[in-house]
Image 1: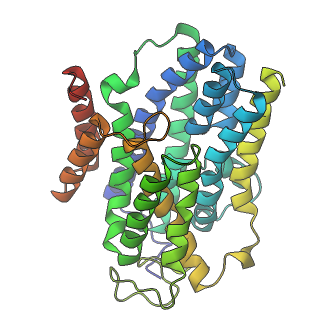
Image 2 (image 1 turned 180 degrees about the vertical axis):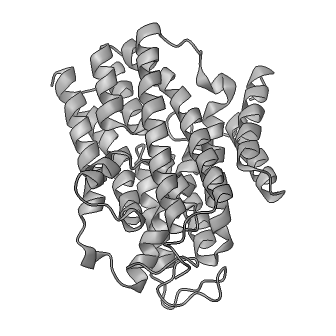
Length: 248
Length: 104
């Protein structure tokens, strides 16, 4: 119970803001390539923008336009998109705990529950920072992604392939950097190693989206072990997670 | 299915999946072990996501290219306690440079 009600010091606030905006910026730029690819796949500007506004989950959106562009059926497009979207619901199990939202805010939080907002939120040790990280990242990505989708849909891929600038590697590095401090906990490190292994083994065999969902087994295997240890936080009392506050 | 039907169905399914996580009854996710599993879920999912983003090729087959080199640079920068932005920019620059010279 480390004073979750205490205000966040200004330097921590700045640090969270910097993480949120840099993740939002890099992701937003990728929206150009989504907008351009979507229009090139035969969707119109409105359909393209509807996906960014309403679906708002990059991997699933690329799946929809990729399947349709390749001549696949609508059913296949929705199925692939939804498989990739399952992880957002699993993130929500944890984000809902630290956000403590109800009513309209809960509906908004659900729409903003994606890789980026979750990664920045769960990377913060303090409750107020978790909330700021989630909301700020979610809103920054939402605005940037939608604006750049429109740019891409209207003027085509003005930036060229985002991979030219290493933007794909930037996203993976940002997630790794956000996970990094948590890996000091033995449980989290074991989970991450197992999840990487599951993804490596199953990626060549299973449809896109499934290997990431199967990594849930890593969290189950480590979390359900009898008397799970917390090497990284030897002082943690039962119910404390990686030294965080027990949940209300 | 028209394109609009496909688009709107995909959007509805995606939102339903997101919202479902917020509507799970509290007693399903209470208790020490369940809390532990749920706290570990984002770790597992993001670790797997980074893996797939880094080494999965078009058909899911494993490929070692500029992405893997970039992640290796990111890990080295994390080991020397570099700032978040330095890690992200370092990885992007590594991938961009390797692709520019045509090595990966």
